[in-house]
Every structure is written in structure tokens, then in C-alpha cells.
Length: 388
Ligand code: NZQ
Ligand code: ZN
Image 1 (cartoon, helix red, strand yellow):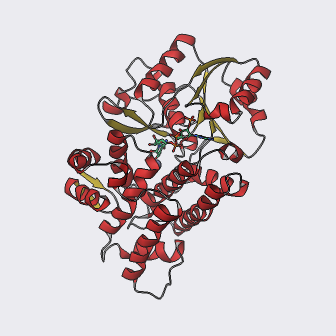
Image 2 (spheres, helix red, strand yellow):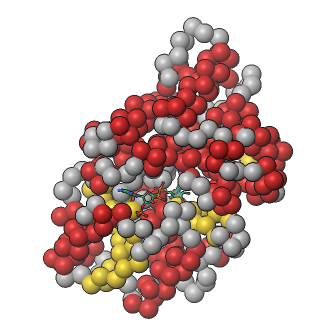
Image 3 (cartoon, rainbow, N blue to C red):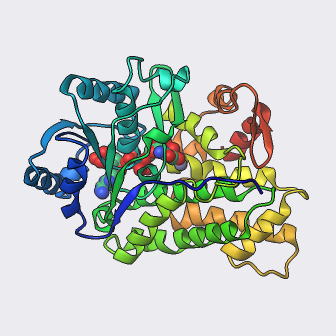
């Protein structure tokens, strides 16, 4: 177990009717607010009008940037950074899911430098300063509301690249489960898979870690398995939406990975799928994750699967470890593809074999992914073949 520093300084307002605190929080950072959002769901659900009223009460000056796409594009980031500079924006208010929040983080950083924001991703340009960011989360999935990272796509170069920097942490996040009532079953399912994957990327690790953290992760996975199907069937079920929302934040805010330094595997692989095919992140993860688990299972790793199978899926502890491992992969696949009703093959979503080489090469950065099991380009191609 490694030493670690615990420092997650995001103030969270959780629950209904918390937006009455929005104006007060924003005005701590100044008067000029850039409101960023996606394709318009915030208007349909009435959130936009509510926000405007709150800003008015505090005499805040509003600027807007809408149309941020799922798998957010670098063009939106550039546009936002430009508005911040031209209008001397004091604080950014991101309202939406992971895409809007991610894009807003890099607008906030782009506003404080002269480099092109794409250099953050391709040239590792320093991110030492960013304007303050406040978020209102509308979809439980990516966890961007409480983490320091974000992922941006460039359709011209067919790249989707993530970057982390402490200054990108939101100052305040508003998490009201009722605003997620309108998230459709498909996006609810994809969000559930994304959270599961954030946990599994950390949980599947053969090094010693805190027992307490493993129990915490198992609890979160059970929470997702229990509540995602309820939220899909009963979209206005507060308990289900609230459990999913709080899990989305804790799955990736750094708490579970504090003592670990293992690389993630399914995420870099999935980012290459969405870079070329623009598919939903959670769908890509659902396709890859069970096959990755199958590929990594052997005598050296089976104990982790046994722990997962018996503690998360309640598989009989008396069975042989290898049998438990196989059943756990089967149950996870059933959860993704039957319960959550997601497509189960690359063929169904149009991902073609001709792109396997390039996607695998980019996923491992021309080297290896040093994750749960070390995987090279050929290993990743093998996993892709299992997804066909
Ligand atoms: O654009 P609008 O109109 O808002 O519609 C969105 C969008 O079409 C819709 N939606 C959001 N809230 C809604 C709603 N529809 C109805 N009612 C609501 N309340 O949902 C669609 C998807 O939104 P998006 O923001 O793309 O989804 P998600 O939160 O899953 O974010 C995905 C992005 O996050 C990145 C992914 O790669 C992907 O680009 N990730 C970010 C991470 C991070 N910051 O740490 C980690 C993750 O692993 C992930 O990679
Ligand atoms: Zn993710």
C-alpha cells in the first residue's frame, strides 16, 4: 500500500431545492458568468429559467455558450476560451453531463493562457491556472463534477484525449437527483456502465490495497447494479437517481484510487472507439469490459475475480475460484447487455475490423498499457476480436 494525500476540495450541494444557493456561490468569484450547456435538455427541463432567475437575484451578468456536443469537441473549447478572454469572464457555470463539464474545464484553463487549447492534449502544455468553475450536474455518469480531469475530441485528427490538472477541479457542484429524471433509459444505462468501469479500473488490481477501499468499491458496484434498472423503469424514482448520482461522483473523485498507481485499461481503449466512431462512452465500455476481464483471467489473477464474484454478485463462495470468476464475467455481461439493454457486439454498433490496428496502437501509446495485466497492441487487437 502506498502513502497518499487526501485533498478533494469540491463543495457539493446535494438534493432538491439547493439552487437557491447558486447566486451566492457564483458571486464569490465576480459578476460575469459564462453559462455553458449542451444541446438544449436544460431548457426542456426548466433548469435554464431557474438559473436565470438566480443570476438575476444577485445581479450577475450572463454570457452563454450552448451546443456543446457529447464527446465534446476542441472547437467548443476554443470558442469558450475566446469568450472568456474577450468578455473578461469571472466564473464559468457548466450545466449538463460530463461533456459540458469537461469542455468547460478546458475553456477555463484556455482563458488563462495564450496557447491553443489542443496543445493541452497533444503537447502537454502546462495547465497551471484556470478560471473558477461551478457545475450543475444533469446526468450521473462521468464524475466530472468532482474530479480534476476531462476528455476532449478532435474529429479532424480522430483523437479523443484526456488530461488532468488540479486547477480544473470545480469549486462548487450542485447535485440535484430530480434534474436527472429526464435522462432516458439508454443514457441512464451508459452512465451506469461508466461508473462501474471507473470502479473496476481501480478494483481489478493485484497489489495490496486497503480492505476498507475494496469494501467501499464493492458497495458502490452493488449500488449501481441495484439502482440503474430501477432508474430506467421508473425515471422519477428519487432514491434510485440519488444513489446513482452520488456514486458517479465517488467512483472517480480520487478517493478509491488514492493508494494506487496502476494504469487504467478499458478507458484508453474505449476512447479510441469513440474517437473514430463517436459512440457513447458507456456503450464502448460495456462492449470492452467483459472481454477484457475474460482476457486477463488466469491463475495469477483469479483471486480478484473470486472476490468480485462473491462480494458483488453474491456467487456461492464454495465454488472453485475459476468457476466463480467465469460466472462473475457472465453475470456482468448479463447486467450490461440484458438488464441495461445495451448492444453486445462491435458488429451491432458498426465498429469495423479494419480499424483495430490503429485503435490498438493509439490506445497503448505505441507501447503497453501497464494496467491490471500488461497489454500490448496485439493483446488489444485480440480483445477487439472478442468483441466482434
Ligand atoms: O446536450 P444535452 O441536450 O444536454 O443532452 C445530453 C446529451 O445528449 C443528455 N442529457 C444530459 N442531461 C440530461 C440529458 N437529457 C435529458 N435530461 C437530462 N437531465 O445526455 C446526452 C449525453 O450527455 P454527456 O454529457 O455526453 O454524457 P456523460 O455525462 O456520459 O459524459 C460523457 C463524456 O464524459 C467523458 C466521456 O469520455 C464523454 O466524452 N468522461 C469524462 C470523465 C472525467 N471528466 O473524468 C471520465 C469519464 O471516464 C469519461 O471519459
Ligand atoms: Zn468513464
